[in-house]
Length: 343
Image (cartoon, rainbow, N blue to C red; front, side, top):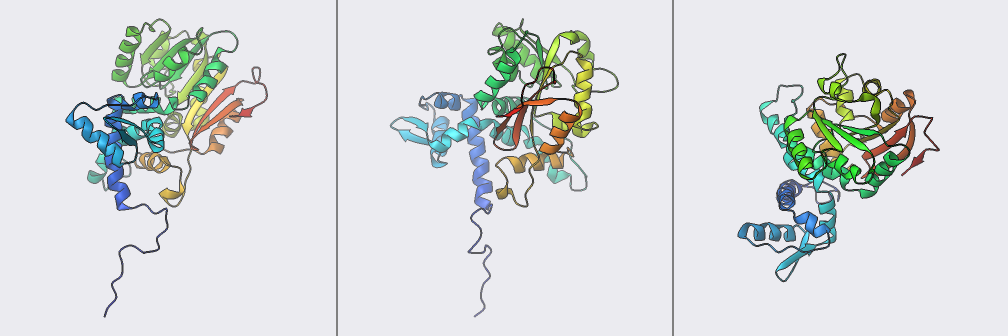
């Protein structure tokens, strides 16, 4: 009798990625984002339970139970330990499932192209990135306290997304004024309306435009009192600007030219962490790496970031890591710096 070769080796490594992971992961991702749109994760992370009221809500809740994220208690549902992690990390899920989906959808029609232009859902990416940045409150507290040190000035968020970050920081550094700039006009318009409705329009100003340094300054810069800006922040964007331009140092140098009294930088970005297989990388790192590879955007290592900081004279004041690959660095010029410290 001829032996039949199995399709999957019976002694495959425990860390192998399977077809079940692919299909059920996609389903779980859609349920996670839907629950977030309904406000469930905010409620659950606040220590409360949820009570679905419609057929579709019950279906989603039961799906989240079967995925291991919720547990049913009578007519109500509460978080499991895994569900708590899901709720805290829903920003990553939103970016991958909704924000970047239009880019990946182009792959099928683009087999002969070198790269695919990024085609995102700007609102989904903006909200997801804000959720990612705010999942670690202690990081925002460290940034806010650094900004609040000394005389108040103006802090600018270059690539501010939906203004969630500057809104959170405005509650910590209460004497500081804030600016936010983002290339997505629609996102800026919606965020401005939200700030005005909350009575924050006087402390936080949002402008639309590119933050990539070019030979000709961007139009929005003429609306800014450049001398008052003492802190510049950027999250999840420097890698792309550096890839499109002449590297990390060139982008930072351009921002320093824009704001002559800049004394503090806050840079949050994803570092390049490569491995032969996805299961050997921190979660979300493979998605982050592949997305940028197909769009032709270079990712940068920790050494490359730190070398650029040092070349421009910036001293690391604090370094705060979030799920290994995401690192927020608070930098100051030597005249303001004490001993550097890792967070």
